[in-house]
Length: 191
Image (cartoon, rainbow, N blue to C red; front, side, top):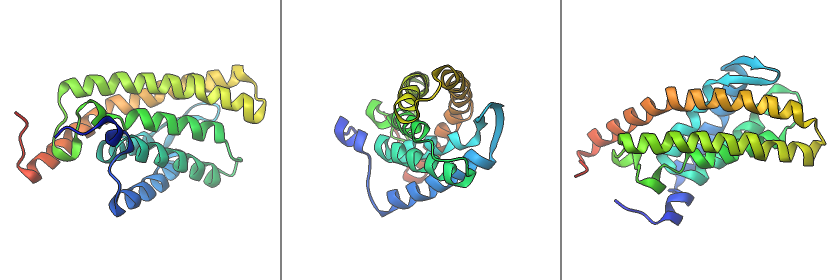
């Protein structure tokens, strides 16, 4: 079923969407703190990157973006190391790119996710990470905190590589499995 680009970006909104976003943000925050492997100073390879895959796949770009924004704020609160809104905004931008699935025809909840969608998803995850952490986060680090950009760029580089690894290696199979699950529930087949 084709949807307009605006509707695909804004996503599907209902009580279920709000609840999923709240649970996703809380889970994202907890996994950022406790479900990660440190790879560089304040930068981790995180299982939290599965949250945007599920939220973005089911509800679209804006719900995914807000989930990651709030989830990163929750991680900052749990961590007790201060609020890092530069990284929260970067995560929101990344969530937007991950959640663009319906824009290019990947309707996970309708059982539609093919190899071509996986390729587009992979490209957008790479572009989204580079923009979010190679451009947006350093800009806001400088604007908000007057931070040392060299350190931010190094941290962003490690975050980008780690995020891309999880989003692609784990995320693509998760999207295929979710799509298959929804297809079997609805008995729908794309022709």
